[in-house]
Length: 116
Length: 174
Image (cartoon, rainbow over all chains, first blue to last red; front, side, top):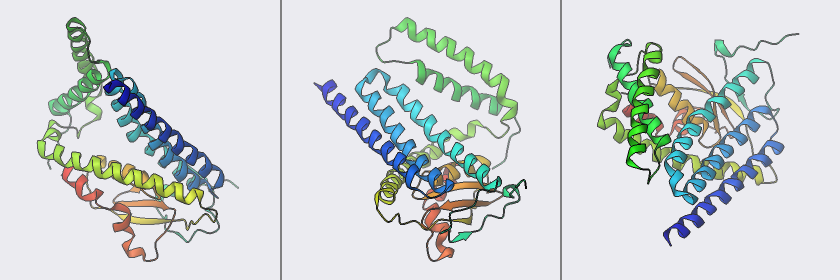
């Protein structure tokens, strides 16, 4: 009985995760520039992936510890990759979206290295 | 906080972390006792090997990080973080699905008073996963944040972006 309940809760998490991944995909298409797209994809894919892995862990209770370890690794590594890509885009001179209101980025390590 | 430079302290820290990760990855409920002993035995060997190879590169790691008070702060931080992350996702879903695409992007600079590099990394990671903000670069004690909906009053930007993360992380890494 309890296994069946866990199974359906896990299924719910999987569907929720897929929903977030779909939102991430829509965001990737609709957002205007690289940085906003990175935002949309990072947040939604991280939580989407985490809830899918948790759902699998609940559907197969023997895997729950492994699932939690994987979730911790995802939470620690996904944002680092996003930051690195955003910084690389900024350094290579990709302009911000026209409607941007402010650009306070003046770090020496972020100086644009544009090749003419 | 006095920093130890490599040595036994970081060796012990790396071994414990590696061993716990190994056990968490290999342990499954309902395994036989002999299998369990086997995993513990191999785990100790792996942990000591990994620690011997890497402890010199992690001079600031220390068993002092296992103080119970830090675990208390970490526990609270995890829940604050999860809640912020769920909010961030619904916020992002709302922005993405609304027909007008209500964005007002920009890059702002905020400062932090956290000292250790690991704490800054955790703060940057948390900011990336919370509503509408993404860390682009950390330089000294300034963080450069790309923000989807920049607020009107920039002097409040730091407080809005960091929320209560800084307080809890300060407790974990003080």
